[in-house]
Image 1 (tube, rainbow, N blue to C red):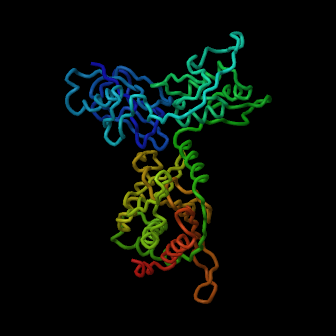
Image 2: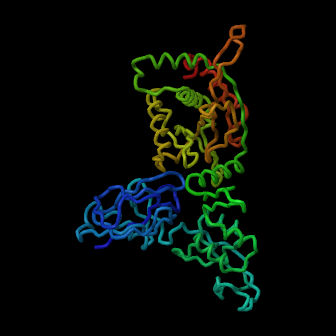
Image 3: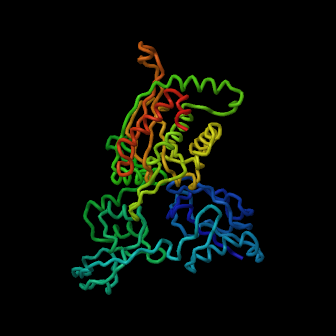
Amino acid sequence: MIKEFRLPDLGEGLTESEILSWKVAVGDTVSLNQVIAEVETAKAVVELPSPFAGVITALHEQPGTVVEVGKPIVSFEVPDDGAAGPSAAPAAATAAVGAGKREPNLVGYGAVVESSGRPARRARNLTVVEAPAVEPSERQGSETSPPETRSAETRPAERPRSTPPVRKLAKDLGVDLAAVAGTGPGGLISRDDVRNFVGGGDLPAAAHHLSAVPEGRQDEPSGGGQRETRTPIKGVRKFTAAAMVASAFTAPHVTEFLTVDVTPTMDLLARLKANRAFAGYKLTPLTIVAKAVLIALRRNPSLNSRWDENNQEIVQFNYVNLGIAAATPRGLTVPNIKDADALTLMGLSEALTGLTESARSGKTTPAELSGGTISITNIGVFGIDAGTPILNPGEAAILAVGAVRNMPWEFQGEVALRQVMTLSLSFDHRLVDGEQGSRFLADVGAILAEPGMVLTMV
């Protein structure tokens, strides 16, 4: 019996993933939950486990291919009785795609998409105007819209169905998606549909020029030698870019700075590292800063909230999922520590170490990248003192931690060489007033300047 495995929704409604590599080949015998592929979503690199025990009969997509959720990627030959037991669940989920049902598929990978392959969109009232007549000789391609759509009357019409990346591509190429026929499930318009339309439609010269540039092309001058390299924008970097643009132009950012003498904190770190109770724990200035942020949030809860535009509500979180920005080869990611406010200093140290290692190795899961409530970015590791960080979408604040430097500083009425750090706090001014942001930053600074201040805050 042949079973197809369709690309699942790997979390938070992601619409596509890139096949990075196959861990199996045609003819291989695989067991249930054996890793068969590594794929990259817009948020993370994910290993796909096999939903069946059987023999690989076909790999439908090559590495480097971007595949839409719901499309078959691999086929298995399984025994007829393989439909019973644990492996039957993915098969039922695959069948649910065609039936338009939402049932769980792979554990932790969200739900199977609707039969159309994308969430249904609202119908909009659009005025459809009759297109001007074009002689057959002037056409470079076939008709792209059916005759019945050419009516001057106003009637409900559904917006062309496509994903955000496809709409962006169409905008860059000057293509009206209403004129493009979608070949995907339920008429979904894909990248190839847009590119094929560009190749056969009557478009401006600039659009043809853009479409003619191959992905990953390297332009060379007439005299030889490479002068520029073009890299496709995709995966984590593409998602991050879109998120940062949305955040920067949606939330009114305010940034405040505070320079602190953190010599007492550095002394505390040295004592903790020498303490046998902390043996095996990786303690860094970021560990102490993270703990200070969690304590300061108890006194300033407005920084742990979200602006709900749809419901016109401010959502106050009674827990803290602490995001830590991590630079990876694939771009910036912000995984978060769930319920960080409930952790001890030791637990926080372990969580930070695990989170950083998984991010750098590209093993961060979609669940770890979603649901953050406030973030920290450690720019000090790059030798940077201060900056104006952009909010992680859906969060009210982000704290940038600068480098610890030996600097002349006023201490007990004299100038002394002290260890100094600058903190940069950006917050959403819709949610956080200047007073609230200032008090929070002052609380964090007070803890770092004198860790014993914690006793007055809890």
